[in-house]
Each structure stands twice: as C-alpha cells, then as structure tokens.
Length: 390
Image (cartoon, rainbow, N blue to C red; front, top):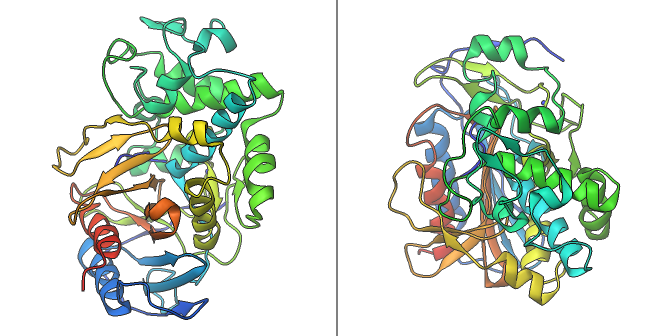
C-alpha cells in the first residue's frame, strides 16, 4: 500500500523483538446481525500479523452500516500482558491526506478555488528551485501525486535509530519541509507520471490556509471533525504524546533489528501529509460519511474518485489506482475497494470500504517493521474481509 514511509516526552526505550508475544482477543459488536466475514477468520488473520510479522499489538474492525465488530491481538506494551485497548488512539499517518483532499474539494465546490489552479497562483515563489516549477503544477496534480515533486520524506533525519533518537522532537514548519524536497530536481514533468509525494500535501495544506485564512487543521476540524462528531480525532500539532487509552508504538529501523519505543515524538514533520490522530470508530465514521456522499457534493466526490494508475513501489502485482487523496485497490474476488492507509514511526493502518462506504474493514498495528513484505498479511486481512470468504 502506498503511504508515508516514516511518518511527533520520553526517552526511547530500545527493546528486542524476540520475546514471546501473547495473543489476546476481544469481540465487540454494537448491533445484531452478520457481517459475512466470520470472527474466527478475522482473528486468524490478525493473529498471523502479530505472530509472523513481529508486531507487538494489532486491532481490526469490521464495519457494516452502524454495526462495528472488533478483534485484537498481541499486547499494548512489549514484555507485558496489558491488552490492546478497544478504542485506542493511534496516529493515522497518510490517511490524513484524505481529510485534506476533502477540504480542498469542498473549497472547489464553493467556488473559492479550482483544481486546475497552479501552485504559483496561491503560493507564488514557493516552488521554484532545481527545475521544480509551481507555475506548471496544478492543485489536482498535488492531490493525485502526478506533480513530479520529490518527496521531502526521503531527506528527513529519521531513517535510522541514531538519527531518530537525536531528531525525534525536532519541530518543522511546512515551508521547511517543502524546501527539503526542493533540494532535489523533479521526478518527471508535471502530469507525465505518478509518484507518491508527501510534499504535495504539505503544499495543499498551505494552499488551504491561503484560501481560507486559517490553518488546514482548523479547516479540517470545522468542516469534517465537528460536523461528524469525531470527538477522538485531532491534529497532533506540537503535541508529542497520545491520549489514553493507547497502545505503545514501536519502530524497527532495520530487518530483524530491535524495536524502539516511538510512542512520543513530534509529528510536525507530518503536517497536512500525515499528523492526524484518531480511533477506529471515528475513522470508520469518516470513511462511511465520505463515500456515502455526506461530505462532498456529487460533482466533487466524482472528481475525488476519478483515478489514474498508481504503480506499487514494492513491485507487487496488485492493481492500485489513485484518486484525489484516495486509492482504489483491486480485490482478489473481483471489483475493488476505496481507502487510504497510513504509516508513521510506530503505527501502520490499512482500510478498505465498498458499497459506497456501507461495508469496510480497518486494521491498526502498533509496530512498524522493516521488512519488504510487511504489508502482505495486512493486505490479505483487508482482502479476506471484503471478499467475505467463507
């Protein structure tokens, strides 16, 4: 799945990943009925993620209308038997992009900006270095990852444990992140390729502020969080910790390496590209509302769901296509689902919704492991649940 690769006070605790990890389970349901995918199937897939991928704790939630079913596996803290919380807070990472894209499309629907506006139209001179030219890049291209802009994420000093310990509480302004990216030339001519770029969403957040006069996070709160009653969703901003309840988060910086406690860190490097915090029920309500047509007018929702091919970075064969802040992924049983995963330093989440948001599944892992196949079992859980395999 395409997402932030490394996406924030306490000293990090380095621990080994070789301890036996107990599996704890729980089943919660808010209304009677059957979801199709059985509890045992969901629990099996989640247990596989914990046992085989070296994940400390994980939770999966099935959604069908107003019904919620959840299972959990592993523990909330390495070396303890503390259970994963039922509705724990976690950093959603790149799923933030869907919120930001929704706000941009609302502004488009209000006639306050256009998708074909150039970056230069709203941020003159901001993108003008090493061949990167804001006069040739449109807002649509920012949201769809077709701008050709390099990703600032590749230049952050967070790629190994030593760097992480030294820079985990560094504070970044949006312009700092854009300038990091612009040290490099464009990857391709605007509109002539596809490459996932967090830089595009930092710029989208800056454009929201230019159009409205308020930070992107305030617009997300006013336009999405408050109207939907998402009481447990917020922008991290300068906050370095998570509210209770939450599982501890762990980052593995190299394959088979030790796990580093990354629960507390600055998320200012994520910004409009990935700093939102949420809970499973809140995130489910957002996706159901978005795909159910409650956040965007039909024309703007259609624009969001108009896709282009999105080649997988890992070379996998599963077909993905990119809309505006949203991804379409092919199902093994035919058709596909809408969603947007997210990765931070210590959290990984995946989600998928079908039937205009009525049915869906979400997975949250409290450990970000350094393995080429880290997503495979998580992707399988989403596919199994939505295909309703018996």
